[in-house]
Image 1 (cartoon, rainbow, N blue to C red):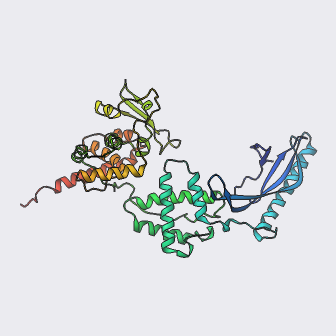
Image 2: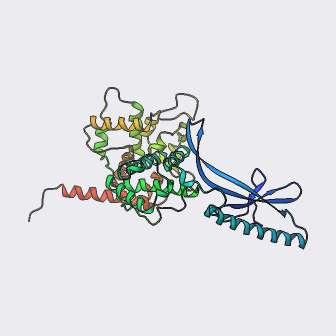
Image 3: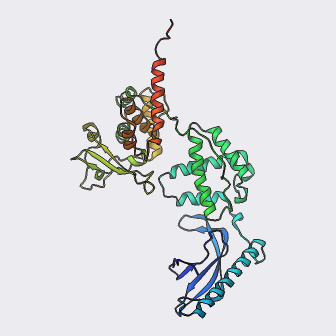
Length: 403
């Protein structure tokens, strides 16, 4: 019997300890002091219509077989314990035989995982995804769709899981590297591997086709453009008719605090300690994954004036009433163009600009790591390299020395 029973709401528990078992051996606790053994089969996925989502979604197809074998729930005598041992051995033997029959198709049904359109699985995974990098999951999904359309046009509308091979994944990495700059390819590859890992976990894929496939990128190099202090002031001095004051305030706040967009859009007045001039919040990117996900940022009078005060008595009121991330990005690009800044500036560039500028002005790397909410200085070191390159550029800007 299982050493630890995790009893489910239907009074059953799974005896099989190997996640790859199919069928899995389980038991249902009966009211007469016995446990009835059964086999749970996983038969792949089928597409069913979901009224709430008004479209077809992937649903697991299962079957349960009662073995008509019973265990004593709490054996009291040596005879009962021996009966349990022999019955369990028989059940495990039957389970193994059924697994072989299932693989050979002798049971009258076969695994249907290959019948699913993998695009449908990806969409379902995205719809149910709740973490802070959901936008990047969507981007990885689009990269894969574009890749298949370009390189495997026969599969552009329907691709079965069996077609997702290591060779295809190697080709996909090459495609990502050919269309991406800086860390872009690696960023999308990491999200794609999360999708693949979920597909393996849900038995949509038998094996992980991404294993041992490497997408190389210099993660320590800072690839995004940054704004110098002079360019920051140039941007702040630029206003125009129809400018959204909320996006303006929020981006300036990012330039002076380094806060990510996903965090700044959800900042509330309850995060501000006005008496001690401190802003404290939980980073969405690391929430639940790091003991250092909370960040405290000292506030000066200028930052406090940007924050202002709540317009209501509700402390949960958001500090910045921002539109969608796409609209914020459009507003930022229009603003930088009006300011005469030709660099490719995104919201995340504000975070990079903050880090590089305070390092350039003498802040030590541990302080910067703490302000950015990094769990170690390893993630912060790429900014020191950017500072070194700025210093080199400053030296190179001098007239050529001829002796």
